[in-house]
Image 1 (cartoon, rainbow, N blue to C red):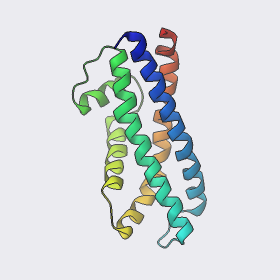
Image 2 (image 1 turned 90 degrees about the vertical axis):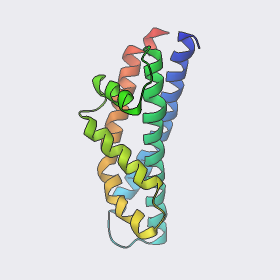
Image 3 (image 1 turned 135 degrees about the vertical axis):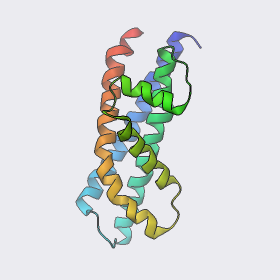
Image 4 (image 1 turned 120 degrees about the horizontal axis):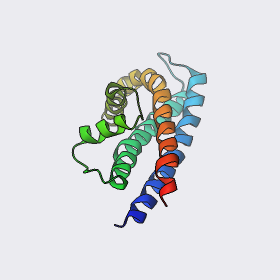
Length: 152
């Protein structure tokens, strides 16, 4: 790929992230109004199921698509996931590695939870961690606008 193609790839992955984020925020707002509780109506359960799915998808896009595409533009060797996350941290996308670790671990729990009672326990965590995910995505958008978009 040429540098121009790498830049186009970053811009496309950020657009995909922003689209996913828009839907996540919509679900988050709806579920915040419902609130975290022990029992959910069918409609409330559907809303939280949608929220967890959108949370996991957005975290995946951010970590596995956007961070990697930024590395490619900046001539960073992909390396391991921890290398990618360390570089994202150095770029100022999040305060600490622990924050992104929690987001990623919650994503993994969502992806591997199949029992209704267990997934319900994750709803409060998603409500808690979603604002941090929003903030990281905003930091990425600002970084790309400042450092990569101008490179075209």
